[in-house]
Length: 278
Image (tube, rainbow, N blue to C red; front, side):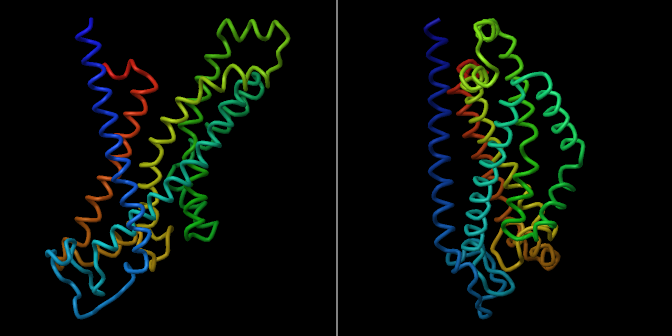
């Protein structure tokens, strides 16, 4: 028994260390990319289409822009968009999850809203909202925020309904406590762990969808050093042998997504110790 506990504890410590390292790395990318946003726009045609080297680790593009600086600036922007959109989406999901516990009528309405939104192709709805909002930064934020809450809302709604059927909640109702009191006092605290893990795991989806709609031309404008813009522009030059224009930005995007998954797994392990045995 003691050996099993030690193994579980060691696994949780390993996950926490990995999450801490991932957080530091993400913070470094976000900060360094933000301060180099202007440098990412500098062009110099005397150094255009240079292959990766010690001076330019990710090479340069057809306008002589440093791809390493440009990639960092794009990832920084993507991370900030992910943080903002995940926060807004989680507030929507949390509010609907709590409201579902107020009664059968409220639960029915919320269930209908979730089913309708989930019934529309996700990328199509995202593109439509972004286009209707004028594209750009706020169009992307609105599109992602208004389409990424459904899965988390469904999870929180199911958890809230399960808690509502527990004995202590029924006793509170018989003692004269109203649905709002029960939802806020007895149900909401139990939803906070699921909310935290859901928010962390929403980040990579938001980042990938931001890159996706920007790649399709419905997101951020071409002049911004966004990952979607970088990958979209590089497609025209891959056939010319300029492989570094897409390889390094794509690899770093995958790395950022994996780091968010590590943080989400660590959060789940801390909040639910049973997961550490998996």
